[in-house]
Length: 227
Image (cartoon, rainbow, N blue to C red; front, side, top):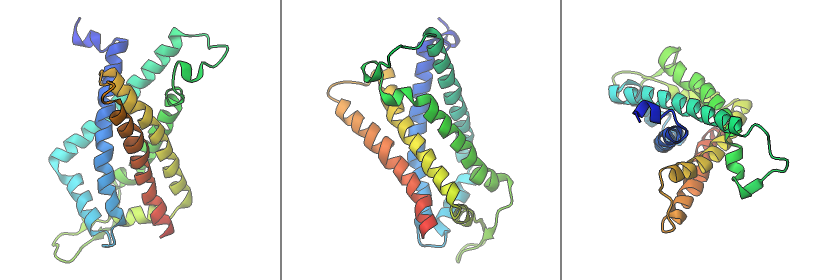
């Protein structure tokens, strides 16, 4: 079987969803570390320097565009799998099978994934599009010759709006549910489950990706709003 044919099968699509999902898991860790600089008490110097590096480094930009392609690929294939699974079982169960056949998280993946996708679009419009294509205030810090785009100020002003803060928190709830099931599902797809490691994988999936990272992202706009 050719690779193109294999990745058009259900198993091949699950492998693609799992691989792209694990890649996105690694991205959120790096992204959160950078975003925490918004809470530094340095008038945005560290965060703006970080944003300038991420926005102008050729390698980082190549990876960033690849990331956007991965997100679209991940969403597209996941939607395909969802519809194919529903088509394979056109008649719903008379009684909900509950956790006997699938976890609650897995049954909400389509909804949570949709919430997360909408959130990503709004997030890119608020920050990425403004940084690269919109008007952005400039700021020069002591010891620097060239001014930096003041994405820190834009972030501070954005998170003064209450409904946007609520939206970000809801988005992170969607991210939490998505990561809890997604990490576990990816590990199952790649055959990583083993009684020796299931405890560690469960800890990483739930406490790191499912709780710590979404809470970390949600804390940033909430702290800025109440500061």
